[in-house]
Length: 143
Image (cartoon, rainbow, N blue to C red; front, side, top):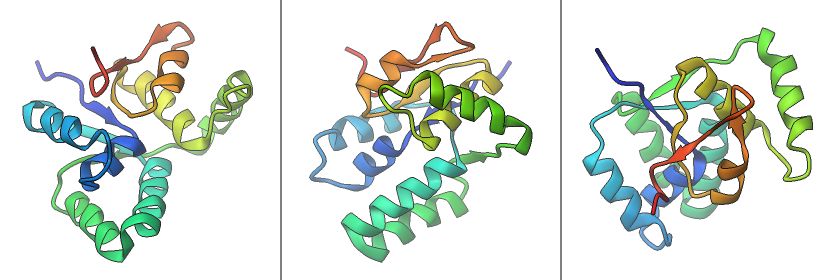
């Protein structure tokens, strides 16, 4: 039996590539010890590329995309039928607020049946629930 992949959020990718990020050492440590596949979503891929380009230039963005091309992680597709679910999630967590990337990760957890995540966003991923009541387990910031 194969274990579920681990969900990777934007903050994890940024921390992994940026040596000056406060979470960099932990991101590297967790990744080196991980025996499961990483998976993310298109909105997270887009958000990560935007931040890496802005903070680290085209070389940082290129290295991230090259890691994807080499098969270092998978990208989960959302489908048009999930638009209503995304909208409902963003309304439910409007007070945070929830963005599209985070909503896509909640749907990914539901599709996987597992909420193990790597994220620097403690507040949001301690608040969000997948399947409306199941909490995420943040493997990056676990104490």
